Length: 282
Image (tube, rainbow, N blue to C red; front, side, top):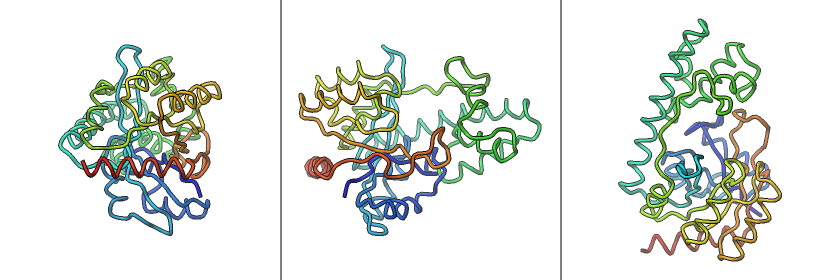
């Protein structure tokens, strides 16, 4: 059976505790699941400690965030089987600190807008991750009855990019090529995530031609058919791995996509496993 190689839990900005994901995947008929929380080692450590749960093989992963300063957009890199190393630890520590600084500033401004809101309530949603994500603040607002969902109209008013949200404080991300160096230091298998989401196709073409990525996430709920077709052609041209993942966030999502919505074929998972094993041997 295929595997779903892109999922999030309360270890970052998902709504589902990490121990609940494997049973969900088993009921969906999956044999393999990657848990890939944002800029943290928590989900990878869980999968290293629980290689199989409920009959589902768990692949350690992390989704690292970078920034393409030339084109001014974020970049997400799925890193499979990352090895613990100082470079990766430093990346995760800095990103946690920067996100919390921005989140706490936004929370203070929310308290001024909504007397019912308290930062302490939002921090309850950060107890697993240690990070005050925007989704956590929105979950608190939802619980207070101040919005009808996490990623609805109020989210865009508060945290949107265009037009700019009234309490948005932008995290400073590392340049994408520096993040790629971090992934290489961790000996991870690096897959460029959902290129359509941040209009990243020019960068995908560039990194594929330079041999700096091992694969591209093609089967994703938000990838356009046009980009999927080009990504398949790039994978064939450069011998890259083709993956699929649901990008599951539980209820912290604008549109529901249950685990197993988008999957990766067995032969491509085998390529990830083999490349990871080769790199682990040095």
